[in-house]
Amino acid sequence: MSNLCALNALDTVIKVFIFEDSWMCQEALVAVLGQEANLQIVGAAAIVADGLAALPMAKPDVVVMDLRFGQEVQGITATRQVKALLPDAQVVIFTDFPQGADLEEAIQASATGFLLKNEVQDPAIVVNAIHTVYRGEAYLTPTIATQVLQKINDPAACCGVLDYQRTQQAAGYVSRRKINSTRESSFSKPTSPMRWYSATVQRWRG
Image (cartoon, rainbow, N blue to C red; front, side):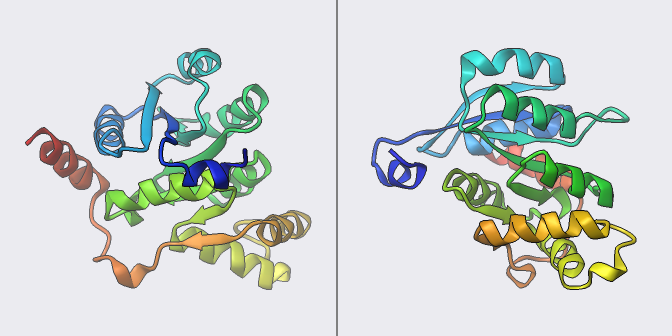
């Protein structure tokens, strides 16, 4: 059964695994996503190696992946390893302010969702992103969507996000997938992600 058909089944539960080294962010994601009837948190890890070791048993449908663990960018390598272990699993990058090379390499690593933490003003955005990539579509927050489309439309100006050849790869990526993006007008101006995480955890704790 396809993911789209499966998602329409009343008893379908999407299994989610979280890679996040910030305990506050990880706790908030677990709290928020764990309240969704059709999402099941099958694991969370602050250390990449621990998360990868748990994946074969957890068998997630969707992985939410931070890019930076400490000062190192390990999320790209981890995404490749996730896809090697579980080719059908979808990966949503959930990070702060990625460099152009991060986006480029994440696309090459087959991530299908890209969320900037400071653009996620509503936890429902994360939930929507998980549902979207599970259906086989791509999900981008506004800044990421703008970066990709600008470089596709103006490949000669490749000095920040993608070089010319890789811009063409990105164009193929976009053409193969339906692109979903949040609308900036739907949300208030970005606030500190830590404030959102803290408020979210407190709200679910009551």
